[in-house]
Image (cartoon, rainbow, N blue to C red):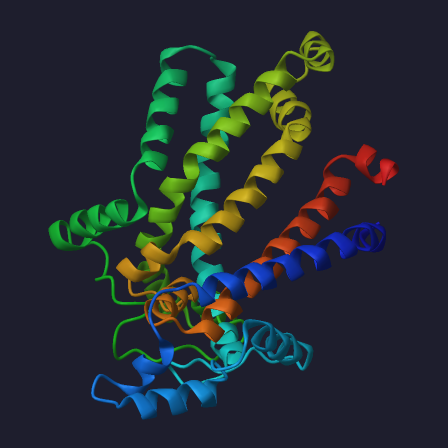
Length: 338
């Protein structure tokens, strides 16, 4: 089934990624500022800036630059970052696990709260609990993530001193775990270092909670709406009339059949959080893709920005493919139709 879905999705995915390449290339060239002037420094002469532009290939036409860019990608290269001097691909590989770890942790925290919240709200529609759940979840998504992050830092670090300062993934002088996945919590567990795992978890908690509060509303709303539709179905009434345990009716029959739209929403939320956690990474000094992209945008680092956008595009394609495969296991009817 996975191969069938892959074959159906491959051509649209390639077309989408090519569109991403074109749009990212054009938009980066429209950024204000001159990368050559930035690299040359404020005291550089016009001749020096011109020479750097020539070295970077910025003196060529846009069509020629785009052709060179496509040739680079064909060779498996994304160019060098003008800010760090390192290959963009290696920077993305180094920073991607930090962003995935943060996004997955935030989504997990949101899911743990949003699923029960949505189910309970669906069981008591238009009740006081239902209205309170909607107000709380809407408040979370209405607040800007940087404000939520700063508020959490103020409460849990400055006031209560329960959690560490927003200074990255580990204390300043702590040794990182041996790189296996690049995710510190997982790598420290695989290495059997429980102390390092707990320390990395403490540093992960606040930024993950910031993202989780933001992701809470769409997941809770979709869970509530999907459960409301399922709870009014004939087979749920039949299951209740058959005197099946309430937990089995809700967990197996109701929630199991309500999962498809919830899984779709989870994929959308994960994609959005992965690309939109720029401000959260900046607030918590988290060395992920978001902070890398923001720094690249500030200095018009074309190669880094284009690499970031392409990486996000590939992540979205892979995520959509994973969701399509998951559909077949959640609902066998999707497998038959495929």
